[in-house]
Image (cartoon, rainbow, N blue to C red; front, side, top):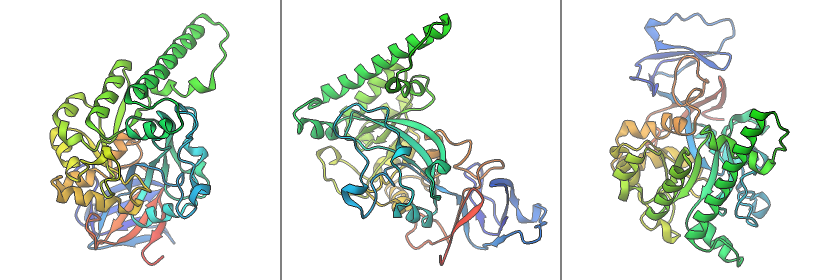
Amino acid sequence: MYIIGGTVKTMAGGDIQDGCIRIAEGKIAEIGRRDQMAFHPAPNERVIRVPGSLIMPGLIEAHCHMGITEEKKGTEGDDCNETVDPVTPWLRAVDAVNSMDAAFDDAVRAGITSAMIGPGSSNVVGGQFAFLKTRGRRVDDLVVKAPAAMKVALGENPKVNYSGQGKSPSTRMAIAGMLREELTKASAYADRKERAADSGEDFQEDFRMECWLPVLRREIPLKAHVHRVDDIFTAVRIAREFGLKMTLDHCSEGHMIAEELAAEGFPAIVGPDLASRNKIEVQNMAFKTVGVLNRAGVMTAVTTDHPVSLIQSLPLCAGLAVKSGLDLEEGYRAITIHPAIICGVADRVGSLEVGKDADIAIFTGNPMEVFSRTLYTIIDGEVVYEEGD
């Protein structure tokens, strides 16, 4: 397949005017100016001509619950939170995602080709996120990385859920304490397993502890649900105590402590700002947060937190962040290469480079502008949406 014409925004360097992309076996095989590339399509090979368009990496949603909290299905389609036990690290998003959820089609029509999907924030430890492509019937075929992160939550949500049941956690102290206790047990388990391997002793693996090993080895991050300043700093404190990677998800008051967060070095996934301030801890939520953090030196991505805000509003949320002070190019990065880096999948997606997955979105113009339309969405080299479908 060839894509010819338009401006190619590679997110890996400068833009390419009047560009050309050759796709082979689901990967980007060549990319450059049309007048500098050989053009020899095979018989029946598809050629997409899109002069005047904007050609980008497929957009990436860095934090959502698409397919776990299904649209239009109420309780029957809600598998987001196991609200009977505050610590459930062994739960896996891939076992609950329904890729037939209508939100997947909405994502594809918006040019969103991949998403980080996982459990909600009712538990201190919610379980394991997965990074998935957005088109396909069998979830196993959509996996780019799983597990991709371990969800933890501080603040209002675990408090409200479990204090209402008359058990811990009912305070922020208990949330932090329970998370530390679980991490301490996991660290001790990892040490025992390593000693057994070194000595050749038999070792009985514990299913509920094995899921922590990628976190302790820094292969995947803690995915920390944090809104308020105090919760953000508690998450940072615990991550530092155990030497863990972490993403700061929502980070609604991050603009108040931007310099401190930049010094800590943890990335932020900000949003959903296109939602009501329906909880005490989001009273200072604002679109300006992304820009303030980004200018301070924090790597930032934008999230809809679907279904809190609808998945198809992702590029518009980035546009509203730009309107509130985020640099325009950083707005593009916040929905492409930055979430790819933050989610640990930048070797495959997030930019248009030779060898990467051919996940491409073609728009009539800047997707952060409300009147821009999606012309084509391509995943793994296959056209999965064409305007008019």
